[in-house]
Structures are given as C-alpha cells and as structure tokens.
Length: 119
Length: 111
Image (cartoon, rainbow over all chains, first blue to last red; front, side, top):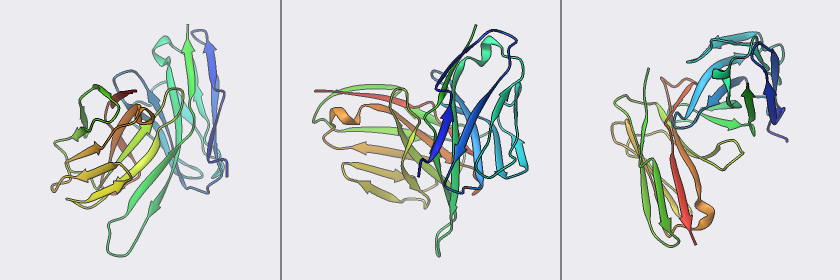
C-alpha cells in the first residue's frame, strides 16, 4: 500500500493564479481531510469529506474548494491564490475503530505534504 | 472551538535524559492522539488514548490521558537523537473524525 500520496511536493504561484493539490489514498478510508500547517499554529482543518460525494468546511475554508467524486481521491483547489495561503498543506485519511467495551476512535494517516509559496 | 495547548514549545536536551511534554485543554475530548513529525514530512501517528486515566507505553515512550480527558502527557525515557522532531497532540471532538491540533513541542536531542 502506498498510503496517502500528495502531489506536487513543492509549488510556487503568483497572486491570482489557481491550482489543484492532488491527494489519493489506497486504504479504502471513507474519511479524508485537508489541513494547512503554519509556524506555531499546528494543523488547521480546511475541508473534510466523510465519503464520496460529501464534503464540508473545516476551520479555515475560505479560498479553497474541494470535491470527492471517488473514495480514493480528494483534490484541493485554490481558486485565486493569495500570499496568505503560503503554507504547507497536508492531506489525511482516517478509519474509525469500533471495539467491544471501548468508545469508538479514529486514527489518521497523513500524506507527505505540499509546500506552497504564493508570491 | 476546542483549543489545545502544548508545553514546552521548545525543548533541547542531551542524549540519555528523560523528558515530559504536556497537552492541555479546558475541553473534554473523546480521544487524543500523539504524532511525531520530522522536517519535510507529514505527521506520523504514535498512539491513540481513549479512556480517562489510560496509560500506554511504546518502547521508551509513555503516554497518559488525564482522568477527565482534558489533558495528556508524553514521557520519553533516555532520549536518543532519533527522538528529535515536532510532537503534536490532537483531540477528537464528540467521537467524530475531526481533530483539533495543538501547536506542537519541538524536541531536539543532542548526541
């Protein structure tokens, strides 16, 4: 299994340009999400999906769009890039564990990230 | 919005020393995870704790979930240079699949 893959690894954009960050997973996980990581702020949730055809907003959704046409793929689109979107972007997929006698819990698996610079 | 705080923010120690890092919140989480992240890579899951008071050990790493499920700690015994990295805690809200992350503790273990 490749796990969670992301492309590209690095990207430089000019203000106003658009682009799509690709994310794919081969673990048949229903849940996928996109985070951005900025210094000193941890990871913040941008958008997430609980299954094909279903997406929802996270903490910082403005300026980003997502779609989920298949279980495997969850692309993130920047419609008109701004310098404030300079960040490292991580895609994750997760699986919910349900075991007898314990509360359900989820485990996330992250991709290697995309470092985006907007000039 | 539930918030997670981590302390210390930075920690630099010598190989062989012990250390503890903390993850705190005023909110209750249904589960809490610890990750380690190395430069240029994504976070890698170390452990998930679910039950208040739960203690899990992973070789030299000991994880504890607070009784009230609001805080957690990570203790490393006899730290090694390979333990160097950013340690992140993340709490799950209401048994859902959305997590809130702390800002991380950056650990440097010097040989």
